[in-house]
Image (cartoon, rainbow, N blue to C red):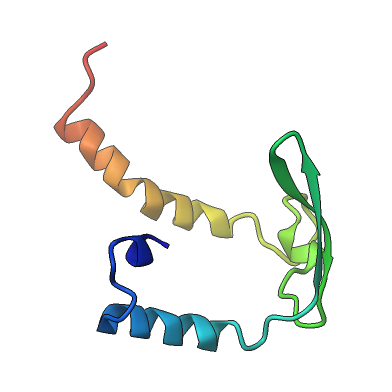
Length: 93
Protein backbone atom coordinates (compact mmCIF):
# COMPACT_ATOMS: atom_id res chain seq x y z
CA UNK A 1 0.00 0.00 0.00
CA UNK A 2 2.86 2.36 0.79
CA UNK A 3 4.40 1.86 -2.64
CA UNK A 4 1.07 2.66 -4.29
CA UNK A 5 0.71 5.73 -2.07
CA UNK A 6 4.11 6.99 -3.23
CA UNK A 7 3.23 6.44 -6.91
CA UNK A 8 5.43 3.41 -7.43
CA UNK A 9 2.74 1.16 -8.96
CA UNK A 10 4.55 0.89 -12.31
CA UNK A 11 8.15 0.63 -11.05
CA UNK A 12 10.32 -2.50 -11.32
CA UNK A 13 10.34 -2.93 -7.54
CA UNK A 14 6.54 -3.20 -7.53
CA UNK A 15 6.67 -5.76 -10.37
CA UNK A 16 9.15 -7.86 -8.39
CA UNK A 17 7.06 -7.61 -5.23
CA UNK A 18 3.87 -8.62 -7.05
CA UNK A 19 5.67 -11.57 -8.69
CA UNK A 20 6.85 -12.72 -5.27
CA UNK A 21 3.38 -12.41 -3.76
CA UNK A 22 1.80 -14.27 -6.69
CA UNK A 23 4.29 -17.14 -6.32
CA UNK A 24 4.07 -17.26 -2.53
CA UNK A 25 0.27 -17.41 -2.61
CA UNK A 26 -0.01 -20.40 -4.96
CA UNK A 27 -0.51 -22.98 -2.18
CA UNK A 28 -2.87 -20.73 -0.20
CA UNK A 29 -6.39 -22.10 0.08
CA UNK A 30 -9.06 -22.64 2.67
CA UNK A 31 -11.50 -20.66 4.72
CA UNK A 32 -11.09 -18.06 7.46
CA UNK A 33 -13.78 -16.98 9.92
CA UNK A 34 -13.41 -13.44 11.21
CA UNK A 35 -15.01 -11.88 14.25
CA UNK A 36 -15.74 -8.15 14.24
CA UNK A 37 -16.56 -6.28 17.44
CA UNK A 38 -16.27 -2.59 18.28
CA UNK A 39 -13.75 -1.79 15.55
CA UNK A 40 -11.65 -4.89 16.15
CA UNK A 41 -11.14 -7.85 13.87
CA UNK A 42 -9.83 -11.23 15.00
CA UNK A 43 -9.50 -14.68 13.48
CA UNK A 44 -12.26 -16.83 14.95
CA UNK A 45 -11.29 -19.97 13.04
CA UNK A 46 -9.68 -21.33 9.91
CA UNK A 47 -9.23 -24.49 7.90
CA UNK A 48 -7.03 -25.37 4.96
CA UNK A 49 -5.83 -28.56 3.33
CA UNK A 50 -2.45 -26.85 2.80
CA UNK A 51 -1.97 -25.63 6.37
CA UNK A 52 1.54 -25.76 7.80
CA UNK A 53 0.20 -25.48 11.36
CA UNK A 54 0.63 -28.62 13.45
CA UNK A 55 -0.64 -28.57 17.06
CA UNK A 56 2.15 -30.81 18.37
CA UNK A 57 4.87 -28.57 16.96
CA UNK A 58 3.20 -25.28 17.88
CA UNK A 59 2.66 -26.29 21.50
CA UNK A 60 5.04 -24.80 24.02
CA UNK A 61 4.28 -27.67 26.39
CA UNK A 62 6.68 -30.57 26.72
CA UNK A 63 6.13 -33.94 25.12
CA UNK A 64 5.49 -32.71 21.58
CA UNK A 65 7.74 -32.95 18.56
CA UNK A 66 9.19 -29.51 19.25
CA UNK A 67 12.38 -29.59 21.30
CA UNK A 68 12.35 -26.67 23.74
CA UNK A 69 16.16 -26.61 23.77
CA UNK A 70 16.10 -25.42 20.14
CA UNK A 71 14.91 -22.01 21.32
CA UNK A 72 18.06 -21.35 23.36
CA UNK A 73 20.36 -20.84 20.37
CA UNK A 74 17.77 -18.77 18.54
CA UNK A 75 17.30 -16.50 21.54
CA UNK A 76 21.06 -16.09 21.97
CA UNK A 77 21.48 -15.05 18.33
CA UNK A 78 18.47 -12.72 18.33
CA UNK A 79 19.56 -11.17 21.61
CA UNK A 80 23.18 -10.59 20.57
CA UNK A 81 22.65 -7.05 19.20
CA UNK A 82 20.93 -6.08 22.45
CA UNK A 83 23.74 -7.50 24.58
CA UNK A 84 26.34 -5.66 22.48
CA UNK A 85 24.37 -2.42 22.67
CA UNK A 86 24.04 -2.84 26.42
CA UNK A 87 27.78 -3.30 26.87
CA UNK A 88 28.73 -0.44 24.53
CA UNK A 89 26.08 2.02 25.71
CA UNK A 90 24.79 0.99 29.13
CA UNK A 91 21.72 2.82 30.31
CA UNK A 92 22.06 5.25 33.16
CA UNK A 93 18.89 5.01 35.20
